Length: 125
Image (cartoon, rainbow, N blue to C red; front, side, top):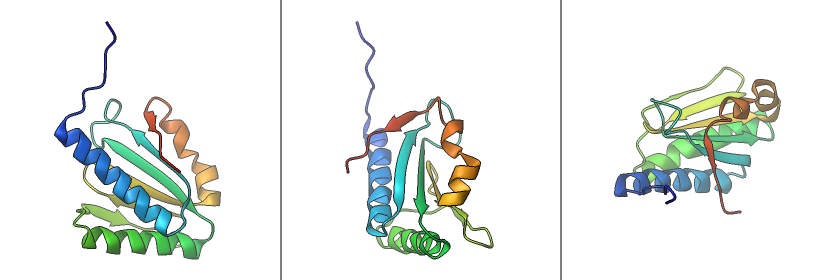
């Protein structure tokens, strides 16, 4: 007998939050958006979302729009932080964390390799 994934209401709500955040990113033209289910490999977050902006101005615009729209959509933000040059910005949504990178910073940190044991979530285009 195959083991299946049990989807509970709580899991479904968390994944719905991820999809809402991804939609916000798409609205601001974020590029290379990926999401990972890290619930089996992290005790802090259940989901990681990573995206890039094509310029420092776009990275900042994505960050500010996600913060603003999250508030409007009642998606609670636990913490957020920026660097001084807008190359790697982070928004913590309790069980989900969003990393917004400049393209150079994303290549440099190669964050996805750290998540190689997490399951990537298939996002519809």
